[in-house]
Image (tube, helix red, strand yellow):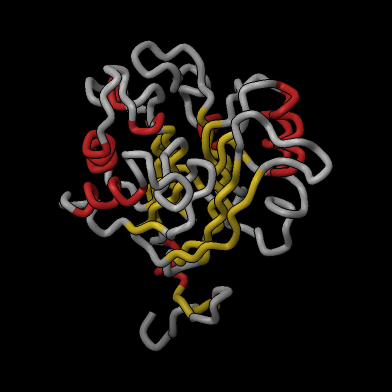
Length: 267
């Protein structure tokens, strides 16, 4: 209607936005365990993982098991190596990451991003697991809103996962007052969708794959012949799922021992 001004709202950063711009806030996120960049053919290749990412044009990429130069500079296949390979590609060259890898968790984004917290997944009163597990929490400015992305990788044994899930849902991470919607929790949980711990995480956030028709009939591990889904993406209720795919191609079946999970969401 002529003369009517658009409705505006203010995000947490103090910027005003129109209702129309907010409705158009659509983004794609990939969560992917890259197995230290070692493929099923036992070859290490950052370029191959970069090619997988490039194929699906994600705006946000949450990776697990990526050796990082900050903590393990002696290892090949660091976050810097992958960032360099991504910079050579047409769609992925705008992806950036914060220089704070933690226990193999690295998050890339084409939107402005800041590190909120990186830390371990073990209570102070318990000894650490044999394989250290961590969490990487970043805040991403989508323009229309500030998105909290929590990227993690849980342990291999049930006692570890019970303890780690308690920490993850506690006051340091998902229960922190700054971790307010919209929120995405993603990564390799080493949990089946039918497990009690998966249901506990669903009590905090929603498993977006369950909202789609294929439900739990699509798997992510092992990549060459997937029979289970350990990789999940949970999101707060104010995020709407548009689509989810688990690409099974010649490339994804060899690049890592996990398949990537790619979701398109709308705020």
